[in-house]
Image (cartoon, rainbow over all chains, first blue to last red; front, side, top):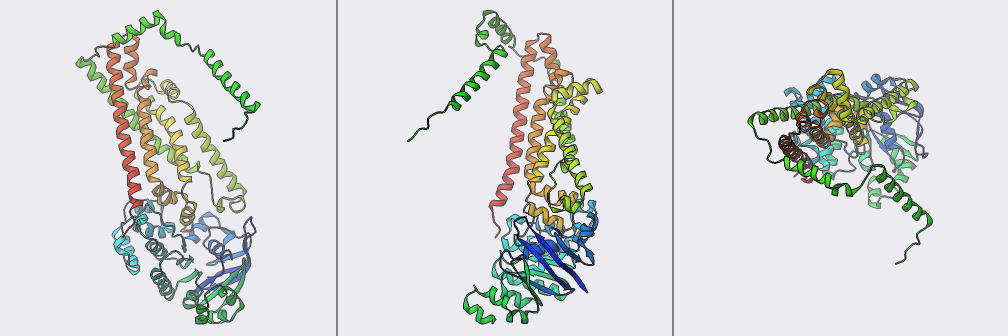
Length: 257
Length: 285
């Protein structure tokens, strides 16, 4: 089943950058790696997919719903089925870890429940959140404010929020770009195990070796256009890969090639 | 060091500003020599001499205490009412940002409606705070009669205008990336307010609100001049009856009250801000 279908998808910013006429589809249960140099359109694609911005041309169908045909309620309901993790964490610094994770499900809850949750978490919610935090090794930070945590810990909170949201599609925009290598490994392993549980995951990565190691499918962008779409084995052979790896130290090239 | 030659324009500006100041002084009968006029000096000595000793009869003091209490009560009720009125208004008075509010995505009808709401709520807030408290008090005294209630209404009206604008601008200042994250979780604006905008701006929110309470407290001491309750009522009566000893007591108690309230406010605000500061200063282990 195709979870995302893009046809001639374009998003052009006033400065001419963005995404130009990309067509691809993503199947349920895939772990997709998006690679490409800075400014290639990776973030634009992810923002389009989580409904933060809208296509300027072409169609984008997510979970069977076409983005441009949605009213606000439908859009909000679709967004609540998609979770996102960002490079700069985007956690609320002044709120505690528990509330930041709780927020993942706020889109699906009634207004009263959201207000209640902001003031008081039920025992069930608390234990669920602790369980998720435990898999990330930060369960002891439950009631600490996010601004008191390190970058790596904040990113784990963001991942916990995505897991708690129970989304079918998880998008991660360079989730390991601002964290230490140990946390990066932990987060990528976690995405892989989530993927094994049936979640569709889209990772945008700068580290091509990580993408090759973890992903079942690679999509590469260059200058806003889709340059490659296929399995990692084919990607290594492709010109795009050679071009992307061009400025990486030689020993890395030897290892991958 | 090289000095620039002053141009004709500089001289013209200087003359213009001086001219405006002098004309304004003439227009307001500004004359320091008035102070030295023997008749005026005599009147002032009579007034200041009459202030001492301040009135301390138990009956008067208990009356003053009752009015002081009423003044504080007016300021508290008005501040709380203003918070509840200004919060929803500030939601609409926030400049709609983000692509989903663009004309292209939202559609012309919804887009126009949202911007109309924006300008309407901004307009309401501007009128509310544009009319001074005492003028609101005059209006409400006519509407609901004498007493502390019109005073509460007056301070509520003016305070709503000020807090609504402050809140709206405060909520607007929240990092747009956090707002976008909150939106992509599927939250609507009300949920975003609860889960993102208020938590992020809470220290500022409390600080503005406490400051507004201080201002309301000061204004509440004057409301009595137009019959809208509080300690000002007695001040007005005592002044009109030339009971200067009573006036002395009243001025002293008002002074003490204002200082005490400012100290409380300052304490609260530094506590609030310190909390934010220390929290961001201490990175976790």
